[in-house]
Amino acid sequence: MAGDIQKIPEDRALVKIVNITKKFSEVTALENVSFDIEKGKITAILGPSGSGKSVLVKLILGLMEPTAGQIIFKGVNIFDLTKEMMYKMRESFSILLQDGALFDSMTVEENIAFPLKIRKLPKQEIKRRIDFYLENVGLAGFHRRYPSELSGGQRRRVALARALATEPEIIILDEPTTGLDPITTESIESLIINIKSQNPDKSFILITHDPFSAFKLSDNIAVLLFGKLIAYGPKNKIILLMEENKIIYDIFKRANIRLIQAV
Ligand SMILES: Nc1ncnc2c1ncn2[C@@H]1O[C@H](COP(=O)(O)OP(=O)(O)OP(=O)(O)O)[C@@H](O)[C@H]1O
Ligand SMILES: [Mg+2]
Image (cartoon, rainbow, N blue to C red; front, side, top):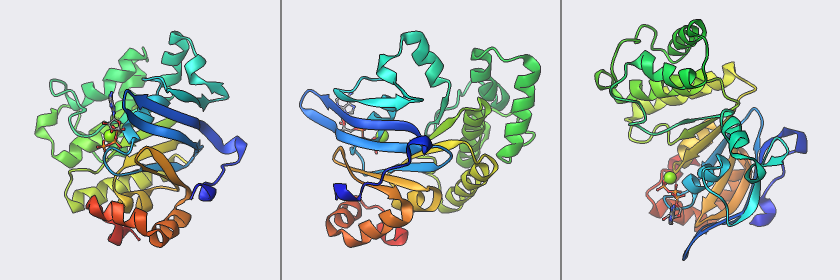
């Protein structure tokens, strides 16, 4: 299936993942994985539990070193950067973690302000961004609430506002709808599609074990299985591959993943 992996034109590749292998003593979490994150698109990293999604994201952020391979961001292998340059590089990214990512002791506005204060933005600009991004996620006026006073879906929206407010080039969405009921899931998915359409130049990486979500939200899909990239390309192509390939189909089905609805 490696022959099905598609190449992104050089000038559209924002992050290039090149022959990445990551081993932890006896476990090979990733094996010779290569694909590009395309600028201005939503790229899903799709795979069942244990397939290497989180390890790959940690490598992209330079939070761990690969056993072999390179992550090229803006023409430079990030593992050649100095510590200071690496911190600067990470400012281009923001990550929406699963539930629990909000600070419980802080109000909604304090949560959103937190990374902006670290970046030493002026007070007025912090206030502008809090108001703008809360409105953007449909939570205008929720400034003074604490996370405990919000529903699961609202917490996810605040986390999304916080991720957007640093105005990064790349937003990583880690299982943005996992654990939410179907109606809330749909509203968060619509919100992501909406935000993407308002920000055509921003790039998103969607980490998910759910083909349905990947097919609905993303432009390109990278499918990981047991640490190997088994397919990468525009989503329509990947849907066809999954339909045709019984092994992939069965693995996702056994993992109780909504493949039937997805394809
Ligand atoms: N620090 C570590 N030390 C040893 N093994 C690790 C470490 N981190 C991850 N692994 C292993 O690497 C493999 C991939 O893990 P990873 O967390 O990337 O999976 P995942 O696709 O994110 O799964 P999930 O959907 O459950 O979050 C797993 O076998 C895991 O046990
Ligand atoms: Mg994970």
